[in-house]
Image (spheres, rainbow, N blue to C red):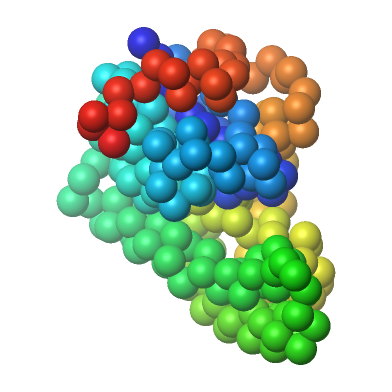
Length: 237
């Protein structure tokens, strides 16, 4: 069967992986996960005990969690090198460097902001402290990424890769949390504009919004979460 990507909404980081699947062009399916409701169920905990998205159900029927692991799964199948580079080349090493940075410190910088937003019952003093800490962390990581970006259209060269996909899914959280104007970091701002105007990411955003865009034809439909949970091989999770 085709692999199935369980993607989260609203504002899931998995939007970048949807774009990567589109760039790759190989058949896949999607499964929509409401991150405010579905991940709280006991059934979902069987596929990801940390109650997070994304999750990939591989073509062998096994659940694979963690964004970086799913990206590496895609890289291993990118025979035509549409979203990656030959292993061992300088371009591949630089792509992995960006992927590691985005998936770790850049993404985690937003964690205090999400914690403050989702805190129940509200604790105003703690939420204010979390927001202040989060703003400082996000600013620092943006400064670092701005310094890392070179004079090329995308993170590594003249075409988007898995590194750009991972960044695209997360970078938009800046506007969601209204931390500062994205134009403060011009290289990153222009990079984001290029990625976010790409047809694959526009497709991903439309999917996230509940629309039915055409895409490149690789996406073979969406499967309800209940059906996915009933058919996966939990023995290999």
